Image (cartoon, rainbow, N blue to C red):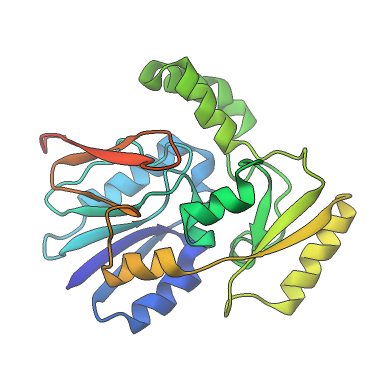
Length: 248
């Protein structure tokens, strides 16, 4: 089969390795990591890439989670879309929703890091790399309330904002993708921030299965032609698809 993958560049190393070993033909296009600080713009970028995809692909693979609502409202045209059921890239780096709840269930917005983030950002981020910039928060909140109601809007903003209440910073290690020098740099960064370090094992399984076409219903949403990604805002389904016409 032939797939087009549209993904955040933070998954570049993982996606390239899996695509090289996949039995399928996979063409990959990346969006910049910091595009997700403006969910509206990222949504437009993803949709534009979908809309420009030639029709000789069997599926379009999205290397994102819900990501601060960036993928909410994304629409399939003539080609099915496949997207992991994940709130954000933390779940994808950990390999499952169960692993996310195990490690972050009590502190879902705690700051975490990975070698892939370090590579793409050129250092350790100290601002809200996972959320909306401060200047745009009020406008974004208003739009969320209009679309999803105040309770859901506040939940989205809460999930997007990294928190510093915990006394440690978390580093997600993935076999084959970490560097001892990066690990040492992270320890030094955490020490300078007055934090302890927590190292947990990640996994490539969600990216691997996405690229290899192993899409079980519990972990991946398949959006049929004309369908649209609809957020659910829970820790189980997370996203679903509504059937829409294919008009623009």
